[in-house]
Amino acid sequence: MTGTDAMTTDRHLYRITGGAPLKGEVPVSGAKNAVTKQMVAALLTEEPVTIANVPRIVEVDLVVGMLRQLGVDVDWTGDHEIRVEAGAIADSGLAERYTGANRIPILMMGPLLHRVREAVIPLPGGCQIGKRPIDYHLDALRQMGAEVTEQPTAVHVKTTGLVGAHITLAFPSVGATENIVLAAVLARGTTVIHNAAVEPEIIDTILMLQKMGALIEVQTDRRIVIEGVRRLTGTTHSAITDRVEAASFAAAAVATGGSLEVIGARQADLTGLINTLHRIGGGFAETSRGLTFYRARDLTATSFRTDVHPGLLTDWQQPLVLLLTQAAGTSVVHETIYEDRFGYTLQLREMGARIELSTACLGGDACRFANRDHAHSAVISGPTPLSGRELEIPDLRAGFAFVLAALVADGTSTISGTRYLERGYEDPVSRLTAMGGQVDTVPVG
Ligand code: EPU
Image 1: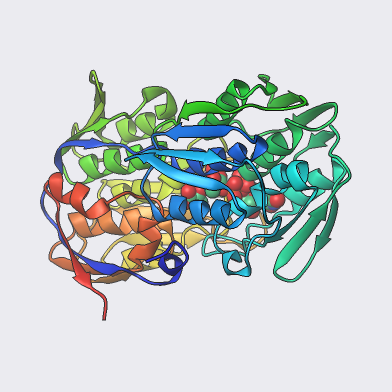
Image 2 (image 1 turned 120 degrees about the horizontal axis):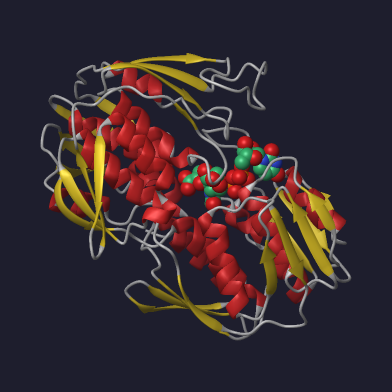
C-alpha cells in the first residue's frame, strides 16, 4: 500500500480485549512532528542530509513520496535512518493527490522559493479537530516578499528573492513558526518572529539547521531571531524521541494498572505530563534507558488546560481524558489549542464514560475560544467502568485514547479507522502485544 492509499483505506481493524495490565518495556520512536519537518529542511541544501531515529509510519512514507515527486533522492539507509539529497529539484509543484494529506506541503513553500523561486502547494484542508487555517503562514511569506495566490485547493507562491521581516504571530503556532524559520534561514537580512512557538520539536529542527550552517537565536520571550545566510550544507542529525508516544505509553501503564519502562522517554520533554499523572495517581522513576511509569495509588480526579509549550500539549489531552474516566471525582479539561478536539468523547460515552462538553472556558482563565460556541471544555466524572464495543477512530490522537479505552474496558472492542493511528504510531499492534495487551488485527471487509 502506498502512503496515499494508506490515507484513505484501513489495512486492518483492531480487536482488543480489555483487562490485562501493560507491563515490561517499550521503545519510543523518533518524533513524527520533528522528523517530517527535518525532511523538509533538507530541501534547503543540495548536499545530503541524513536523519536518524526516523519512525516507520505512514506520515513519513507520505513525506518520502512528496520529496521523490519533487525529484529529490530519498533512501532508507537503515531501519530508522533516512538520507535526503536534494541535488536538483525537478518539479516545483506537489501533485493534487496530496490535497488534504497533511500539514507538511505548506512547510515546503520557503525551501522551494529559495531553490526554484516558485511553488504550487496543495492545501491541507480542515480536519476532525478544527478548521486549522493557514493564514499566519501565508501572511508571513507575503511579508517576506513572496507573491501568494490562493486557489480553491492549492496555493501558488513565487518570489524574486525572500527578505527578512519582523513577524508577529497572533498565536504561537507551531507550523507557522516552522514555516517562517525555514523561509528565513536563507533569506536576505534578519527575520524576527515575535510570539513564536518553542515546542521541543521546533528546537530540535533548529538544532539541525544550526548544524547545516544556519544562524538562529531562540530568546526567552518567545522571540526567534534568524539571520539569513548565503548557503546551507548537508549534515547528520538524530531526531528527538516522540513525547506524544511516550505520554501515550505512560498513560497506558497508569490506566491499566501496569508498569512500563518507556525506553528513550525524556523527563525534560514530559514535565507537565508527569505532574498531571502524579496528581491523578501515576508514578515515574528514571532508569538508565528512559522512564518507568506505573500506577502508584487509586486514581483521583484532577483538572488541567492544554496550552502552547511549556504548557500541557494538546496531543496529550486524549489519553489523559481516558485516564480521568477511571479516576474518582470530577475533572475539568479545558482545550485551548483546537476549537473542536473533544468529538471523540461521544464514543467514550457510549462505552460508559460520563463526559459532558461545554462551550464555556471551564476551570480557569478564558481562552481565545470564549463566547464562540465551540465545545472546548469537558467535565469528566469517574470512575466509570467501560464496556467494549465497536469504535471508529476519527483522528490520530483520539485513536490512541480508543485503544486505551478498549484495553481498560470489560469485553472486546473492534476498532476501525486504524489508518489514522498508523499515521503516527509505528507497529502499534506488536508493541502493545509485547506489553501484554490482548490485541490482534482483523482483515478489512
Ligand atoms: N492557526 C491559525 N492560523 C494559522 C496557523 C494556526 O489560526 O495559520 C491556529 C490553529 O487553527 C490552531 C492553533 O493555531 O487552533 C495552533 O495550531 P498550530 O499551527 O500550532 O498547529 P500545527 O502546526 O498545525 C502541530 C502538530 C499538531 C499539534 C500542534 C500543537 C504537526 C504536523 N502537527 O500542528 O500535532 O497538535 O502543532 O502542538 O506538527 C498530531 O501530531 O496529531 C497533531 C495534530
